[in-house]
Length: 406
Ligand SMILES: [Zn+2]
Image (cartoon, rainbow, N blue to C red; front, side, top):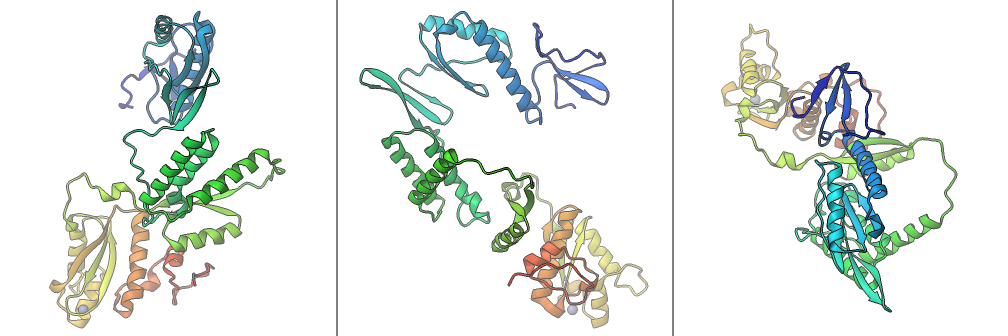
């Protein structure tokens, strides 16, 4: 709760006074029987914040437009969150007066004014007034900030095709839904082609424009089909390449839609904290015998150095600690001190660690075969990981019937 500096606690049972109150608006939340009030706004990113902010703005706008004496000068008013496009027919002095009154309604909410003249940028549009037969009429163009580079998800990135294509499909959808004139449409088509080329997307933009335009037209003019009461079932899965696409089409047959998420994020590429040595971290590790090709894959939620010392202790015949690697060194008389340790994945204990251990163990079982020291009959392997790696265990009583990729 310390995040909310202006949060005050009140034990009073007064109801929310938002609707119909003539004084200041105060937001309340109920938490652990106590009532907390936010005297000046809601926390950024809170689940209710955007909804309440929109209700607040809607009320503020309605009250302003109905009470403002200069409102007859407003020929057009459209608002998106806190950006307002206003067509004003009056003097600049009156406009300034009108703005001052708008800014007195809620002192913590101050609007600024940008006077456009013949042309103004509003959200992602450039709106210009052009004269045609002595009449001024608006024409539209797509507005992009000067910082826009066009860089999106590169085609070589491990992302679903739809995610990569979104940079151009969203731009095409916007283009066909806005009444652009011929020159603006030509310019926008050229920009979209540049975005596709920059991200190495092998798509036919002209064909996509024709298809999306046709779909939009059909959707607008089609009689809606009778509503089907069966609810769409969605699954959220990590995207892992071609096998994921195949899995999605398989699941579609059984009435499931799949939403993919990328397995690696920018956060994985950037480490802001000081790096600690692999022996000081927890995660998935590999022990390789220095005298033969034998390997062992393991996980530890503690420091790798602590787990390693347990493997060493297990070398003693009297030790109660169990270690397949120590057992190998003992039976083959291979020198434990010649082992090589590598931390394959640094991660905390939990589901991710279990899945990574299963993945690495199966990958080693496939590539190292009999040299892997792990007891595979005692290793549980998640069916999805088995599917992705195309691994069929031979010696487990497993009756989960999952089709394997061919
Ligand atoms: Zn060995």
